[in-house]
Amino acid sequence: MNGARTATLASLRGSIARIEAPSDANLPNRVALGHDGADAMLRGGLAPAALHEVFAAGHQGGAATGFIAGLAGLISPRKPLVWVRQDFSDLESGALSMRGLAELGLDPRLLVTVRAADVDSGLRTAADALACDALGAVVLEVWGNVRQLDLVASRKLTLAAQASGVSALVLRIAATPIPSTAETRWIVRAAHSPPGTAASVWGAPRFDAELVRNRHGPVGRWIMEWKCDECQFSEPSAYPQPLAATPAHRSHQAEARAGQRLAS
Image (cartoon, rainbow, N blue to C red; front, side, top):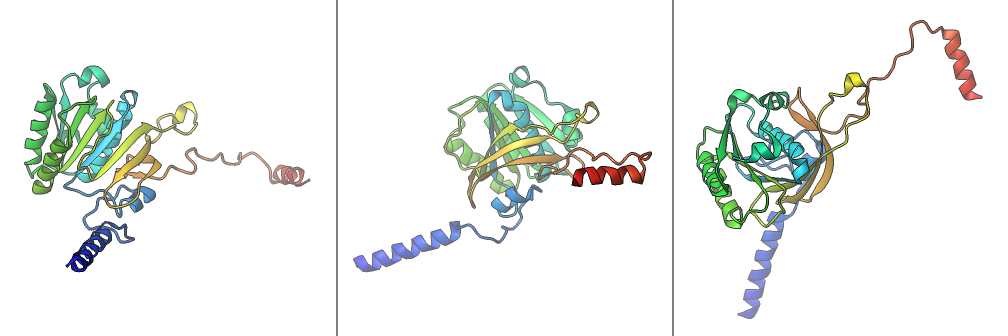
């Protein structure tokens, strides 16, 4: 009997290992981020109808907001988006800029913002919104370490997302990650922009994005650049600044002499 039990246990462990083992094949219905390295780790991209978490330090709240807005736009490009915030969030980090969200590719006409009086109200509002299958995604923004957003609460959000097909994106600012049922967890910081002139200071947003939890594969860290026109992330541009052309008035003899000096 003990031998049979041991064999059965070994078989079950093998099955679980095969299910959880990373594979080169992409998972179905994934939403590609556009960044080759991140998409490879995620086996094709983000899973829809799931819970994803984005964490950031307090002074990095703006970067994390832009990053999660990009995720929401990718997951829900043409469906309404509900963004639930605590009522003091405007004082901490400022109000959401409709113009800024539009520059990131989100349609402000499809955005519904909700101010919650406290964390409990925010959780109830997010759960109610996730039950509406007409939405594309629900963002729940929570500041600080709060006891209400525990493993049980994340499980409820995950089940609601799976039941309706609406993705749940939780933005945690100035908080420490704790166990949850999230499909992915990211820690986001603002990345340095490439040097440029005064005429080119408005470049593409760049994020230092660290994937610290991935249920279907390894983790990693990348510099991810947001392409506003394509509405997706990408590898940072190799040449962010245009190269200077040869002056039109420069003669070919001068170019030849310059080449000879460099060769000598």
